[in-house]
Image: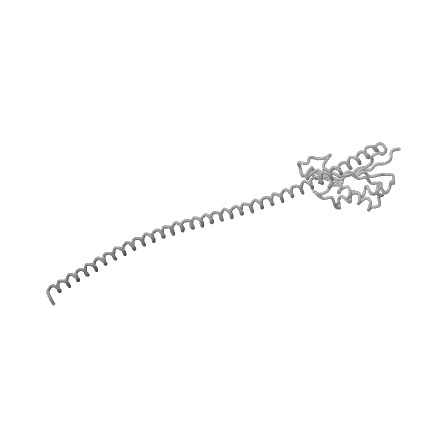
Length: 244
């Protein structure tokens, strides 16, 4: 093998080696560029993903706030409805009490009218009768039942009425000033009815006994004291004989 041939081989080998080195450099450069582009794409995707996650998180937060607002509005509506129902119930109760008060006032007025009529009739016939004996029966507070002392006091009236068929008895019932006027009027009427019933049960004819309840009017003592109130809780029994 000649020297020239060997030199050729050396030249060819160098060219090949040089070409190999150039190829490796190119490959490395391409790989680096590819890696750079890939990193850029990955970074962009990650950035887009972060923005999307932020939007999703914001949407979830807004949805939660909206839900809380809706719950609060629902609770407020329920509370307002409960208050409205309660107000309606109180209004109904107030109307019921007003109706009861109006009915009680009407009953009291009717009783007052009846009392006034009976007083007018009694006063109109005052000149036809001559007053005789009178007596008083007292009652416990807020009571209308006769006690033993009251029944004993009434026995004298019973004797006189039985002995003289021409006599009549006029009963007037009263109360002390405690209680409402309507309640006192009713209580006074119960008291005169108790006395009237006792006289009738003892044999006195019903038509000979006239009774009227006058409530807390015409006190005979001071209602500010206990003793005065005791005297005012009474039924007066007045006997009358026909005028000649």
